[in-house]
Length: 261
Image 1 (tube, rainbow, N blue to C red):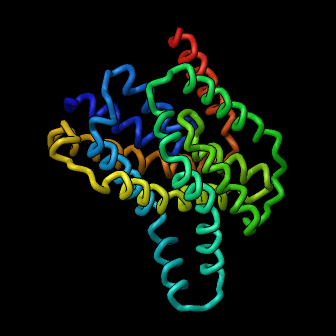
Image 2: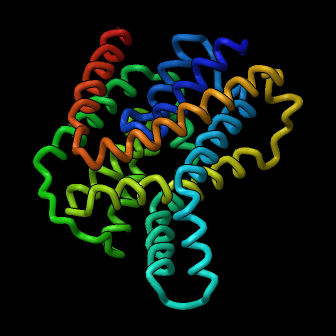
């Protein structure tokens, strides 16, 4: 992988991790077009995902520190309840990750037709939020589990994680600004955990052909664009403008399907 490929893939990761267009789907398309195999570049994958995790932490730094401060007060307060809801939301993806790891990995095989079809499904999920009733409801424990199930389904390349979780929250009638924040915070531990699992027992001297410069470039690109995309997405959800991303996903999905033939 050269520096230009690292820059492009870093930009894709940073933008699409937060925007409801499926980062996994776009990375599958990107690596197919560039001829880059992520299975041979595990270090790069971990680095760009780490960059988006860091950008999320920075955007929500105040919220995260308040949650931890109140949680370690060892009292049953709003922060403790919120953290419990986040942990509940992680249960489905944890089960899917542990029980179906090989099946999930098999989906990331460069099947452009499959990715295109899943992007169409993402487009429909986003489009139907236009009809969701704005009930200004707080996220309940039940809601957090349902949103967690949506996140688990979004391990499929082409299904947007942020799109699926935010759309589900809107269908449930949750407050727009609350579901956007919850969607981004609930993914932190699963991403960190998935990266640690992928690092387990890996010999990087043999598995990675990426030099230091592309790694740095990929990290910076993913971090900066992730920072911007995260803040942008929060405002988009507040304004209820997900329909534009539905159109985008539909177009890209159609292009991917046609390209596969």
